[in-house]
Length: 239
Image (cartoon, rainbow, N blue to C red; front, side, top):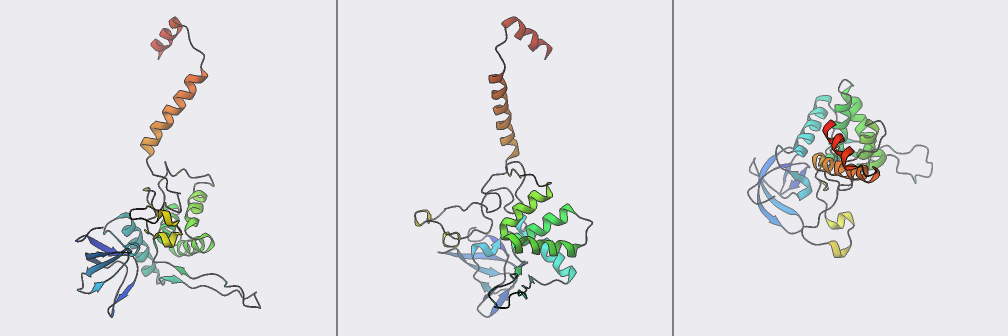
């Protein structure tokens, strides 16, 4: 994202005595080291989001987040699912179930997968389902969910679009190397981080399909015995 580009917030930002909420838009004024931006919001206030707290208006991420926000508002559900203490732990060592942030792209992706798979089910059931997916496995739970919805078969993200990154193979939240725990030698400008759901696979079914056909053609050619010239001509005529 460059100076002058319009952005849409994906997280709540508090700065200079004002609060900006997910879905609000503005224009980038400055770019700072460490992934921070100065953004002039449409309401006149200045905010300082990080790269992973904003997206381009109208993008796939913005549409997923907007759809999830609209569903929660319609159902009267809050932006978080409260955690629950473990009542069976008399010593208090267990933290129970964690709180789930429903404003994240991961939650929106899980909610959209469930909604698209069962559009006639109660929306509240999809909300509870998305909570359970992230509570059990975190972001990686999206990969498990996508596989389960496909009948339990492994999902080849070269041919099936990743529900989290959308098929480009990079982590859509743009984490820093420190957040991902990268080795120091990889901490340089422009270093990409693969999507934690699809493992960095690019969704290019046409290209991979052609490659697969060529590979299968090669296997078939190697397996067939060489045909006499006259027979080969007759086979070609029949084809």
